[in-house]
Image 1 (cartoon, rainbow, N blue to C red):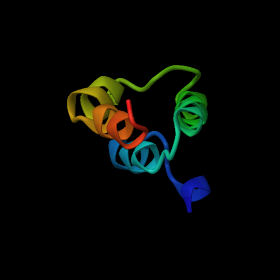
Image 2: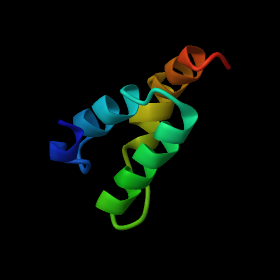
Image 3: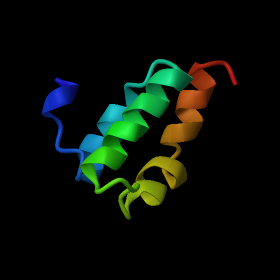
Length: 64
């Protein structure tokens, strides 16, 4: 399923990152997002992933 996501859209990026089960998987997924967006985080990254709490939720799942 994840290979079918359009990683240039906020909804798809959020879904992908929420599915990260470890820090390593998070980093791999972040690299996929950057690759889909000309090697950079998309403009909506901060709002969609950081401000919304997706990163914080993931870190809590990993036991940070």
